[in-house]
Length: 337
Image (cartoon, rainbow, N blue to C red; front, side, top):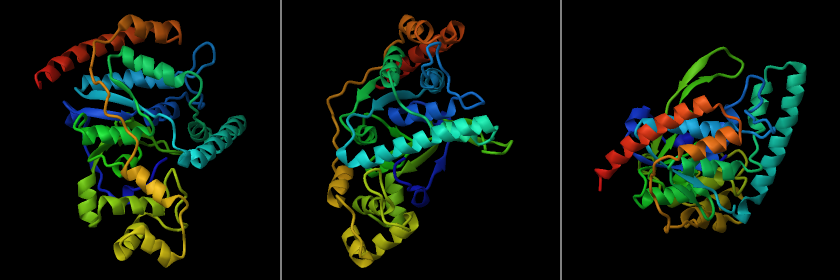
């Protein structure tokens, strides 16, 4: 889930059209989980092929990504590599949480409980060939697919810092901790969203956050921001009880750094220096290749229709749009070089 820093960063609501011409490095795992969570039938069941394999993520990557490409956005998808050992406890906890949600979902469906859909969303698992199929589809769509050595959010932050992308896209705030100057949220979930237990729909729009703006407005350094995250709790440590973003900010500003804060509180954080260094000096790669190519319609049809039972009419329609938008986008991009 990442670190909750929303209380100390200003979110700037924008339109998709504001991102036209931008190159955006996307945290692919984060996006994949979003699709698994939100692309479901009314009873909470995900989309599946005739073999009972989940295909919600493939639907999201085809149709929602095509919409973004039509808006003139150049996308790069970055997949997580091997998770750091520091994250093992969090990953184990997530599995338990999802298994518990799965049971609650089944119980809620049997009882006719309106919370069934909520539990279904929380039960999303990445399994089988989901990642491999997602990578293949995105490649067939002509998009760069990058394999990060470790955390995807660290890699997308590096790509923005290097000037190879304009923004990092993720729902989490960790890209800011890894140093991304600009982050966009809600990129792939833009649109109407139903509020839980209410027959009310809200508009979800993209929002941007800027690292330097957050540091300046809060009068802190990048290192102090990481210290704040450690106090709140990250994917690598549970944080200090009853310390949220605003309290952590106040403590760091008062005492200067996390060592002094922990001494004041009489607390300690296991592996604190390793976690801090992981955010400040993450494992990333620079020897990647970025190229946007013409989509391969036959391969897309084979993967989605022949292998996963998608409607060929719908897929061909999306592919035609994708090819047209990709050609237009490539002509625009060529003018930059």
